[in-house]
Amino acid sequence: MKHARVQAGFIQQQLADQIGVTRQTISLIEKGSYNPTLRLCLEICYAVNQSLDELFWIDKEE
Amino acid sequence: MRPIRDERLIIQNLRNIRLAFGVQSAGIGIILLYTLIRYGLEEMIAQPVWIVFMLTAITLGYTNLRISVDMDRPSNPRKPGSYYYNILMSAASGLIVGGLVWFSHPQEPLRDALIIGGVVFVCLLIPSFVVSYWRHKKAQDEQNEE
Image (cartoon, rainbow over all chains, first blue to last red; front, side, top):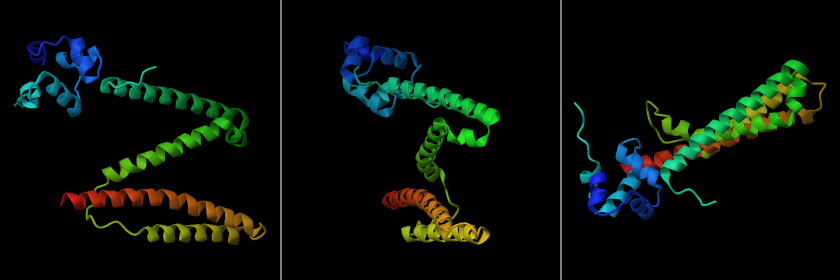
């Protein structure tokens, strides 16, 4: 997600302001320490112009 | 103070409220236990915190009814019963309990038996109505899904 954010030209605070959360939440999502709801995932996707699949998909561990 | 919009902070706030609720309940429990040991049952029930404790328990119980209905997975799912069935069962229970009180304490006025029967009726009617309502809603959702 960090890569997509940087590519879209956002710093954490700008992305946070755009989707109405705090910067800490963005930071925790990027670190993998917070599991966002689908609604927030979609908001992030809309903001950085990426699909859910590209941004959040993780292959199932065997 | 601005309203919290961040979902993570909303969840954190709910966790904090849960913790505070636990601390508050423990405090009330300790006060009631102390009163019970020191002054007896009558004095404990007379305490205002007893009413707070009971109201909290009732609120929690009622709000958890929906969770119970959602968790409920009957082995043979069928259409939930009619609301009239709840009224009938509650009225029958109220009449039985009221009648038992009247027969077991014939020296007491009939009013006492009526009050006890009425309380049983209302206390059974409201939760059974709530459960029925959620069951109907659940059945409707399942029907719409099919």
